[in-house]
Length: 212
Image 1 (tube, rainbow, N blue to C red):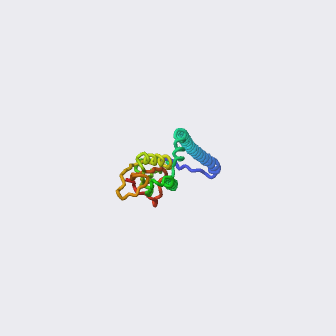
Image 2: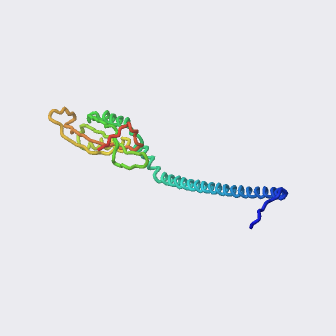
Image 3: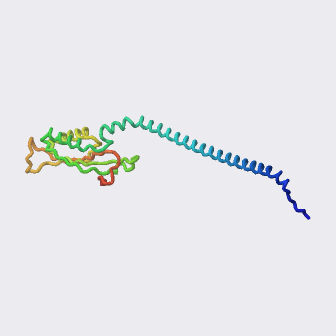
C-alpha cells in the first residue's frame, strides 16, 4: 500500500522559490519561442513582399522597355498620322473650309457638298484600348467640263482633307435639254467619299450609329 506523500511546511518553504523559478523559466522559454516564431513569420512576410515588389518592378521595366521599342518603331508613323488628322477628332471645320474654297476658286464647277454626322465604322472592329474608327461621308455634286477636270478636283481634295479620305465612287451624266450650262456642255458629276478618323470612343450620349 502506497503511503500518503505530503510536504511539511518547512519543505514547502524550501521548494516554493524553486518552483517559482522553474515556472518563470518555462514562461520565458514559451515567450522566447513565441517571439522567435513571430519574428520568423514577419521575416517570411517581408521576404514575400520583397519578392512581389521585385516581380512587379521587373514587369514594369519590361513594359517600359517594350513601350520604348514600340515608340521607336511606330512613333514617327504615329506622329505623321496625327499631323495629317488620321489620328484625332474629326476636323469638320477644315473639311468645310477646303470644299468652300475649291468651290469659290472654280465657280464654273457649281460645287455643292453635304456631310453626314460622324458614325462608328466597322472597318477595324478590334482596336487596342478604347480606340475606335469613325467615318464621315461627304457627297459632292458639281459640273466639270470633262472627266479629267473631275479627277483633278478629286486629287486636290484627297491631298487637302485632314483624315483619311477614301473615294467610294463617282457617277457622270449628261445634262438635260433644259440645262443652262455655260462654257459648253458640262457634265454632271456626283461623288461619294468616306473620311476616316481614329480616336477614343465617343461617350454613350454621342453619335454611335453604325455605318453600313
